Length: 70
Image (cartoon, rainbow, N blue to C red; front, top):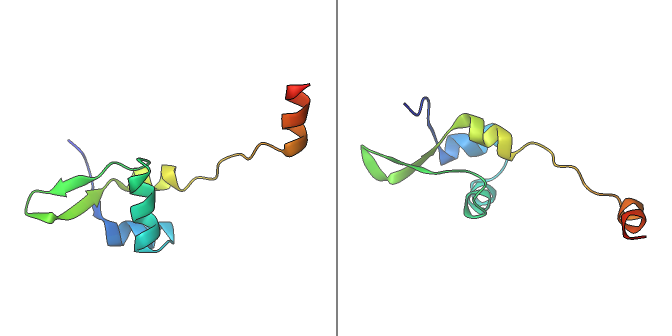
């Protein structure tokens, strides 16, 4: 079973981003979409997927990159 699913609007509110930003994240394949069986126009996502996609990612420091190249 897929568990709890929420709408894109609910997901955007949960993530603290606009609906347009969330759609961009979905396009970048960071979040899997599910179709609502009762309304095919409505797309759903797992709340946990939103949490994972919104986690900070480490940024490699410029001096570390130069060290590794040397």
